[in-house]
Length: 71
Image (cartoon, rainbow, N blue to C red; front, side, top):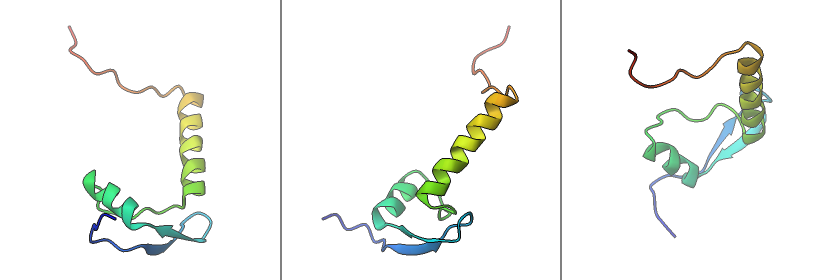
């Protein structure tokens, strides 16, 4: 068992208003990546939100910017 200093938190999803657990392991993962805010959505709503974003991008022709040097 790894001790991270985090404890499980119960949060409320901003989409469905249901409770979900933000586990200590997930909090550690967020902290390692520099995220400072708690998640707003449960996993189910987060997945649906991301799918909707991707659909909007493809529908409106949004493309990711190309990274490189221009001539």
